[in-house]
Length: 464
Image (cartoon, rainbow, N blue to C red; front, side, top):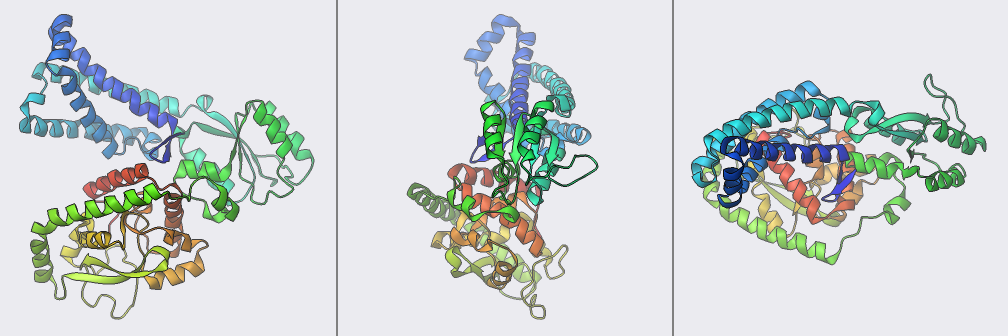
């Protein structure tokens, strides 16, 4: 795994992106040489902004591939869908470049160079993608891994490794102390475990051991693990591995000592200054830019349903303090007259036709920029929840109150990684992502969340 922007990306995915960038750039450089010859191509690339023009094509290509999820783990395990998305990407590139060349003709590549380069790029991308997807599934190229422990964390890790070939991990042994039809029984409390563990590593040529034991007191074979580590075997804590590959914290096996002493959960003065300064600046700019459109939005709301234009609702902020969160009204005026506080559901009949559009486009959240400007919220952070739900969820979900140690945000890590929640189970899953953000909060992670939010808005995902 490679750590970028305070989160981890699979090494194979980074390698795929870099090689595809090389292939796109190389295709258009080769096309230039084929059309102009070596001498004229050199002059064009160095003195006629040729490299800049190719860089524009390269950025457009990578941008399109990113927004079509071609580096997502689900597509890296589904070759047919990946190829279909790649066809969509090629069409999108043509539209983007056509629009760009119309607006700024000096960036345009010669037609002959573009046609040849586009053909070469298409052939190279299709060929390399197909080869990569084939190699990615080969167990011979995966890291041989042993999971030590049982319980929810061990099961989650096993599921993640099995469903995500881009992680490059193959589970060769699961040491659980529970007899199954695929793994021999090992008693994790016995003295024989150390010898058994060493034999398994030696006979199965294990490269990595992931320790996912729940209760480790008197059970963890520390001496054997230290010996194996000194001999080149990578030994990792299961919670750390789970966090790195999923982008969330395993609250079901969370230890308070891990929360206290693990890296993260520390906010510097610089980070606090940056977040507040960025929030004030961005919210002020957003309010000014959106001001001309606010009367039209207000008119649409008033013409399509009776009631106020703005809707204010009590939400729980940092340290549990209450504040009024402002939004454009998207539901009927009497939406909760009979039911009380309830989550919005799929195709919720309380949502007005205009409200559905406002929710899908996230326009309904523009008034929250005022909350950001005032200091009730940040641009990025856990979404603020209603006090009625918070009181209930704190009783049902362990560590739920930890999400209130930072200011809530208009968008957040849980919002871009998980669907809209409407149950306790959804709230628990989103808490895993919220705690990951609290633990790893940084300008880089905020930038990644912002880019992903734009992607979600453009594709109309996640709203209800």
